[in-house]
Amino acid sequence: MIHIRNASVLDAAIIAQIHTSSWQAAYTGIVPDEILNSLDPVKRSQQLKIQINEFPESYGIVYKGEEPTGFICFGRSRDQDGLENDGEIYAIYLYPKFYHQGFGTQLIQWGEKELRQKGFQRIFIWVLENNVNARNFYQKNNYVFDGTIKEINIGNLLNEYRYFKEI
Image (cartoon, rainbow, N blue to C red; front, side, top):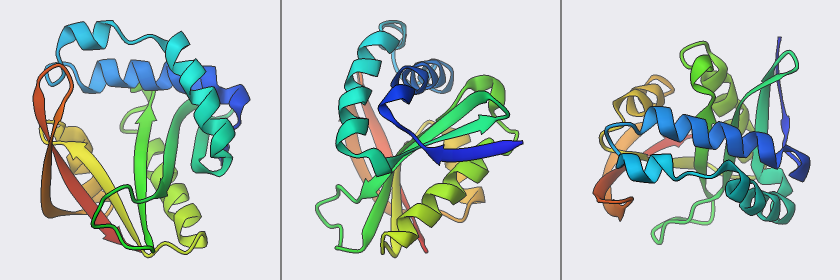
């Protein structure tokens, strides 16, 4: 049985583990190995405790029975061209062993519902150009590339594509 709930600071260590393992799986061959190998779930957990404490209604965690499978983080769009009613999914990650089993779809739908209840009408998501699996996932969930590209540096220069969806 799948259960999704708001995360608390008590979930920070679990979310950090999910985040680290997902990055190491999803970004192999995209982000340099030295970056992926240096990810520290303990350090990330400390950062997450602060973030979740500050924005407790911005994190969700999904479970399969009693086992955590993934998390989502969302809120107001951080883009300079964002409107007052634009939301953003900042992060959505699963433990790799739960990829392609429907957990991501349920988690993104839960996040969309939460954003809609907060009054947002559009949702934006940034995704690395070379992360084809994630791009396909967002397209399958009716997100559309809006033509906006930005360059970021994660050990080397990478392009991020912005996707959006009207809700």
